[in-house]
Image (cartoon, rainbow, N blue to C red; front, side, top):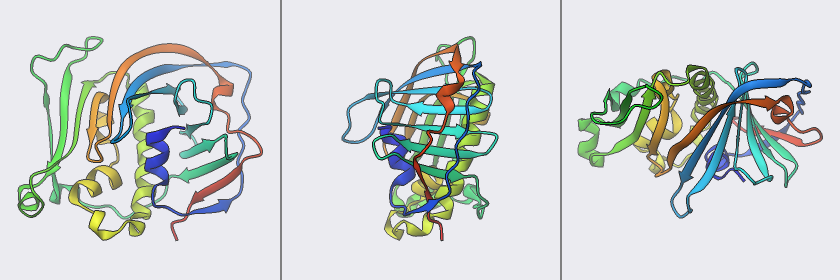
Length: 245
């Protein structure tokens, strides 16, 4: 199972049945990239995650684990969280949501990381989000997001990742009412709910830390040919959507 993605999308949200959508694959191969990561969550050993990205699709899975995967279709602005063991698919579509002026709650720093070696010739920058001083006086000083990224690296990949995060954020915001108020801290709001992935507009993250103590490190990336069947939504699975009534 794709631990971090499934847990972040599903946690605390209800599901309702919806109509199925199946996308047929063409026989041709697709040009794309394979990104390999090491990830870690509290109480879980480090595990490998693979991102396969084309100019339209994103697939996220754990190598060697056939239980499920995440599929994102950028043309449809839709995420499919697929469970083979349950023969079910959670569907999330890009939705309108009420914006929040996060700059009233958090400060964002973006600066070159002195002494960091370049990756593929691209300089490393630090992107850090932290609670504003007046908020920290109540909650205690807190860093919400800490990312090191290679500025300008793989823009065709970061475009898809940014659009994917827009869908995640729209769903999280519209389901915020299901989260107990005591968990709605400044950093949770900024990093877990209204996180629209603005750092992807600056470059490709190589090291990430988030306020839920989830960590991710880029191990390798390469350009490859991908079978179109890699991005097929399985037929015959029950499809659900997040209940945001």
